[in-house]
Amino acid sequence: MSQLWPDRIWIVRHGESAGNVARDEADRAGLARIAIDERDVDVPLSPRGERQARALGAWFSAMPASERPDVVLTSPYVRAERTAALIREAGGLAEPMPDFVVDERLREKEFGILDRLTRAGIVELHPEQAELRRLLGKFYHRPPGGESWCDVILRLRSSLDTISLHYPGQRVLIVAHQVVVLCLRYLIERMTEDEILAIDAEGDVANCSVTEYAFDPRLGQSGALALRRYNVVAPVAEGGAPVTAEPDRNQAAR
Image 1 (cartoon, rainbow, N blue to C red):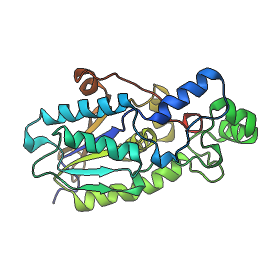
Image 2: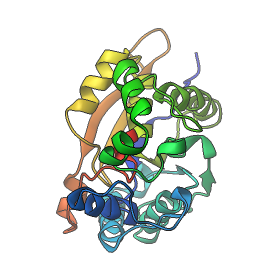
Image 3: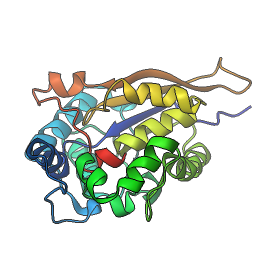
């Protein structure tokens, strides 16, 4: 039977963004709203985020060319595309240089009416949504105009189908967002709600951290992806960039 999965999948959260920084400032000041003007899709990397992405690119570039990513899939959000571009500029991809595939299914979770609000802001301005989230949990709660984790998982199912159809035997780099990293783990490892939320509760997915899967032909009837590392920040630290595990600007609604 032919192989159904890539040989390797790396899932990377984007570098620190200006939204991460603005959210922290709003939280420290006890504000209801996060002071940022751009649409979420347009939020750029912070200077630290750019350093993190370059450090990660240097880590990939230290691999033999035959082991580096030869497919790049990225969220359309500016911070994710820029992270992928800086990895490429640092020589972190295979030769000849692979094309970038921008896949909107890898975008950030949409927050609807809770966009740009801190946790205190949600309680103050939308107490009914705070209560609904408490009752339903983040896995099922869908704010008006936004998405639940289940909604994100639904679109990621089709993204994984595309990956298995078009890139078997290849080495795939995915650059996306914190919730996407977690929801891909949920899907690839066939987790339950409790299992993935327990992992989420252990701490945030760090900026430019690496989660890696390798194809193992011994698993199941036709082989499967096996987790090799999760939320690893050593490539960033070894590259001399600061390690940050800052929530996205909409962390309160995540």
